[in-house]
Each structure stands twice: as structure tokens, then as C-alpha cells.
Image (tube, rainbow, N blue to C red):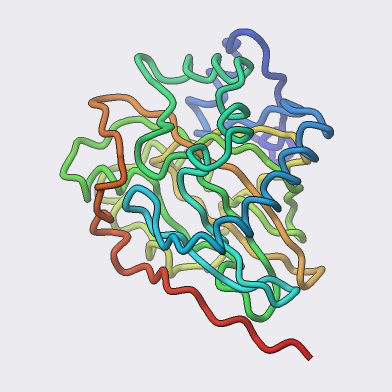
Length: 275
């Protein structure tokens, strides 16, 4: 398929169309344009701006066993740059991810559910391109490798993304290898260096989204989050949460970090002195 065809965006309606299902099964992702209004996203961004300081001052280092990743923004403030289970902290975000408009997404995987209280729950990624940021980009990985760490069968899963900020080849954002969701378990494990590998792939696609767009991508596909090539200091926010099938494994305050997250430091950095 020509590159321009891979950039096609769909409309999210009350049901998933045969065309959308065929596109997903072939390429492993779908982008829905204008799933949320600019006004809804502005209100969501305002809530996230408020919540980042609440989380930073809360003394929490993890939520339901999943570490919070802290960094420093371009203002020199210590902020959470990756916050799990934001749906438990913010009634507004919880309402957003339970919006009835999202219900048709479950049609992509039979007998599936939204994993609001599983894995990492509703995750807020806050990428900052400033020099003191600890989260400017994210290396190549597959989400389904978690199943292997949990000693479970690798099952179909989706990552649902609500885009608070635009993404493009220059602004940074999601990069995927279309069709890689059909790879073997061996390729899933060894195809790339998980997390620490950032080298662009000749077959990768920069997923271009506008504010309010919605994306889904299959957990078995290779993907990364690229940093910006322009506008140093730029902030980029996304909301991600999973669609899962198989046995339910909810998390709670007594949950311990899974093995694959125990290397991740959740020590809050010290803010630089402001002159």
C-alpha cells in the first residue's frame, strides 16, 4: 500500500466498519480523526496541567505497583512525565476514558474489555524536549512482551491513544512498523532492542495526529515514541489505556511492580536552582 494510503484516517461511529476492521487486521493500527472536540481536549489538558502538580506534591512514587516517572520541565519544575492509573486520581479523566463513543473499539477484539484497572491503567505520557527532561522519547518495544513476563499466553491487545497534542515527523510522536503485529514470538522478543533501541527503521511510519484524534495499535507490533526534531522545549501529552482479553488481572494498592518495571527509577529529581 502506498505511504499516503497508510496515513488514512477514519471516522469513529457507533460501530466499526468492515473497512476499518480490514485495515486493522492488515496493518495493526487505525487512526480516527476528530474523535474528541478541540474544546474537550483543551479541558482535558487543563485538568492534566492541574494534576501534574498534585501528583508531584503527593509524595507518591508509584500507583498500584507501577512507578511514576518523574522529570523536570522547561520551567524547571519537577513533574511526573509518565503517570499510571490517572483514572484513579482524576474524575474528569476517568469520565473521558469511559466515554460511550469509545465502546465500539471493543469490536476489534472479540470478548475484550477496557483495562482501566489492569496493567498500567490509564497512562499519561508527558514528553518534554528540554535539557533536564527524563522523558523525551521512548525506544522500540512491543506491549505484548508483558504477557511473557507474566508467564502468560501472548494474546491480542490494543493500546488506545487519545491525543492531547499533535504529532508529526518534526514534532515527534508515535512510530510504528505496519504489519509487524503478525510477527512470530521469536521476532517479538528479538527483533529489536526493547526500550533502549531508538534507531529509525526504514519500514517505520510516523503516525500523524491532530489534537482530538484517536489511535489504536496492536500490542504485538513494534513501535516507539520519537522526540521532536524542532521546537526544543516542546511539550507533548498523550493518554493511553489498553483493550485486553483473557483472564482479568486487576491491580490495587498492594500490587508490586512487575519484573520488567523494577529497573525503572522512580526517584524524584531535584529541581535546578532558579536564578
